[in-house]
Length: 406
Image 1 (cartoon, rainbow, N blue to C red):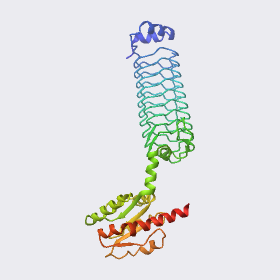
Image 2: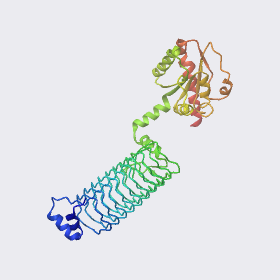
Image 3: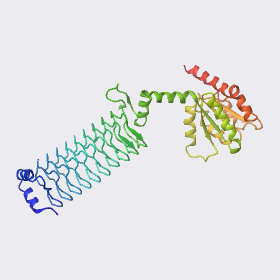
Image 4: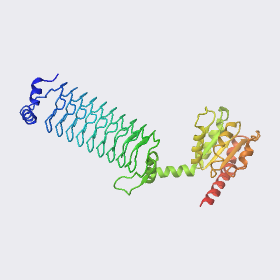
């Protein structure tokens, strides 16, 4: 319970209270659980005061010094805390719905589970603040500083964050549905499994963000800036690919990787059972010796729903495809996801000499990317013929397609 003497001093007014605080710097006032509804204390020195579970509805605390105060579970509904100093304050579970916190200093404060629905936080300093599970629905955070703030996970649905600084903020699993983020600074922010459905991200600074698993249904993404201030402006319209685009443009290693993928990757399709694994290993090893980057897709493993998508993605990265259709009817199905839709990726089929061509071959042989099948009797012959009968026809076709497009 609140200390009666401290309460009496408080009700004498700001001047008397501040004088007493100056003369008693070692005393920590205790106003816990007091009912201070409508109290008028603008500019009061409330540094370090214990307000735990105190009622401060519509309190007038503009410009007050509340550094390090304990306001856990306090009711500050509609309170005026504009320009108040709440650095390192404890506000876990506090109700600040509709409160005026414009230009307030809340750096390093704890707002876990706090309710700030409809609060005015324009220009407030919330840097390095811990706000896990806080409720900022429809809060006004225009121009607020939330750099390095911990918002994992917080509810910012409908919040106005235009021009806010969210650099380095942790927004994992945060809700920003219908939020306004126009021109906000999101550099180095963590946006993992964040719901941005319907949000407006126009003109956001997103250099260095970590964006994974975002929910972006109906999100407006235009003119997202992916370059730092000291570099020429580069804008994109998709937050999920922005980080990749920037890396591709600025990092030589990334460009080398892309060049490697587009010039050296060979996708190998087949059904490689234990008995025929030696053939697979020999084929891969020989391709490596010839400076290719072989990628194997083995259909012995159970099929997943996204198998076709995976195959298509790998094929798009490949220079050409080698498809061993020996005992592999499933490979014919996967080729349906490649041959008709990728007219610039040659497919070189191979098969054991003792086997007949599958009946579906008529469908593929009409396609210019599908090369003449190569028959081999065993592993030794396959490796001996690899350069002239497998790689060479594929490379000729690659050059033919590239000549047409140049």
